[in-house]
Image 1: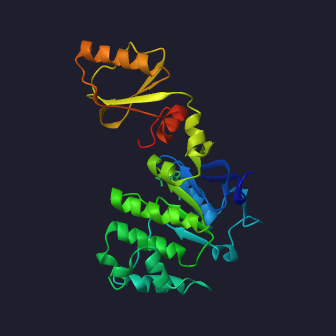
Image 2: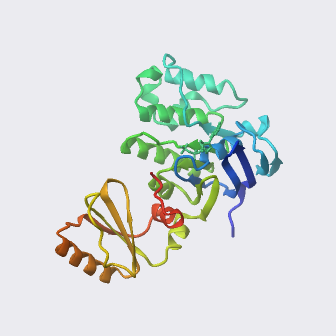
Length: 306
Ligand code: ATP
């Protein structure tokens, strides 16, 4: 049985002059799951989110949220949603608990700041000034602010951009805990690992359009029985011409070469022959299953991070 949808978006359109920022976007967000909009810079993720958060108005399209059809997100709906903005800056000379108390005062039945400090593991920093927090701690505080009204639906716009791997994992664990407690998350990211790790449902966007939707497993399964061989070669080195017909070869950043094949054994044999003959070492060679980055590449011919 399909999980119940908390939100349904139909034919959403937002143009800025000639820029089709959101171009006929439709999707459905299941309850108590992480739903991710994945796409490169400029794909239209933030604009879509801002419309759903009530910050921007769509040119056309419809939004059904909490069982109600709305043209624009109203005040009553805003009480039930939480928003982590991409560029949330707090007053540097406020203390962490004061920030939470301030935002709590905007809502009718907020959670207590101390309860929230525990939820985001910032109890030790309760009396620290915002300006002394690390990037990861600031982001956890921003998530605390987004959750202070105990929302049913939480929007997280690129919650881990610019964070180190440890801080990123801390945020991931907070997000996973939220769905376990019944909250629904709409996340945007251009990190495919983040989408793969956190989401039950992914909607891939490019140039304002949805180009694929499904669970990470469904999306990668579309690539069939293919395997990827990655290696690193000098950016100006020639690539093997003898691998086709069972392969496609794509160059990425930093000399990364990805060979997609439906016949791994034959491809490895040919790659090794080519490496010996050309004197090109297959540096950092790895064999792996396709991921969401490969899905994006197969749909657009480009990588997510360009
Ligand atoms: P990023 O990952 O960089 O945040 P995104 O997928 O969130 O990208 P948007 O920020 O929604 O993409 O931008 C979509 C397109 O709309 C881009 O081409 C952007 O330049 C354009 N755009 C966004 N906001 C405005 C605006 N206020 N005025 C004009 N164009 C805009």
